[in-house]
Amino acid sequence: MMMGMPGMGGMPGTPMYISDNFSLYAGAYFSYTRGKSVRIKCLFDQNFEHIDGPVEESVFDKIKKFTEKLKNNDTAENVFKWNDHAYYGYYYKNNDSYRIREF
Image 1 (cartoon, one colour):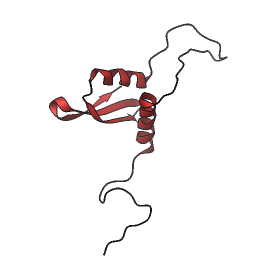
Image 2: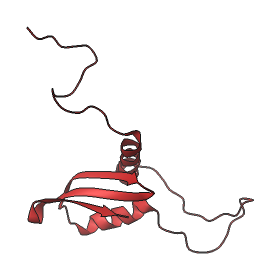
Image 3: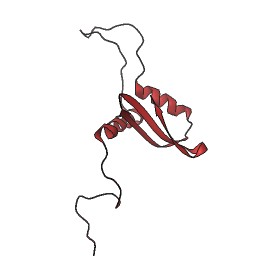
Image 4: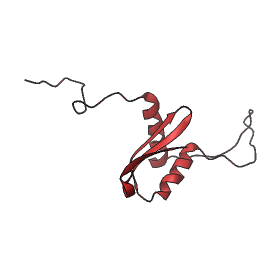
C-alpha cells in the first residue's frame, strides 16, 4: 500500500529542485511583462541629479520586443540568467523545435 507524504507535491519521478537564479529571473521577467506596474526611465548621476540623454533598453525590454515578432508562436517560455547573459527559451511551433536565444 502506498501513502502520500504531507508537503510532497508534483508528479512521481519529476525533479522538484529549481535553481533560485533561474526561477527568480523568470519570475521577474514574467512579472515585468504581464504585470500592471509603472516604470519610470530616467538617468541620474551619483548625487541623483537628472542627466539628459537616451536611456538604454533593459534586457527585459529586448526580450519583450523579440517575442512580439514571434506573433503568438511562443509557448513553453522560460527566461534565465547564466554566465552573465540572459537567455529566452521558447517552443517554436513552425518547425516543432525548442529554441534558446541569448540576450
